[in-house]
Length: 199
Image (cartoon, rainbow, N blue to C red; front, top):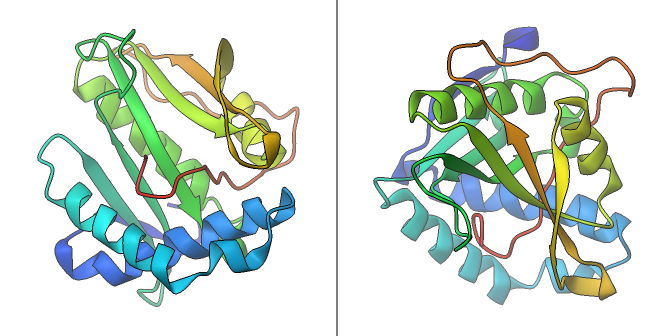
């Protein structure tokens, strides 16, 4: 992983860390999209996110990873697993529920490493297509995913601030290594919607 970062499986001991990284990373893009900061940092919603992470970590079908900097601090996370969308086959689709990277770690390859690991896990599960949802106002994340070949599939659902969540999909060839991003856009750190880890 770039600049000494490493990925590891998350455990229940990471519960508070995951909640903190999730809260801080999502606040960065929701505030940029116009949402009031107090709505994102309310202690009650923090507790709800913590409970959601506890449930996620207990799910055997879900992958949750932490990205650590050289000093051992967690600066990013990934959670993924079977799709939540009723129109998608769980045997062939793998959902990226969330990639979250702390703003101070943007531009250092954390998001790219987490994305590559998502592709590796999806391919290992025998899946041929990835799916995710991205808040329409989070243009930074959309640019990030577009660089790796993700494309909107036309499905949308209502989101906060009158801005929809856009569904995006990516073809995956289990026989090929993860694709490198295109050079058409500068690096961007992904950050997704959610009030809980992936939902």
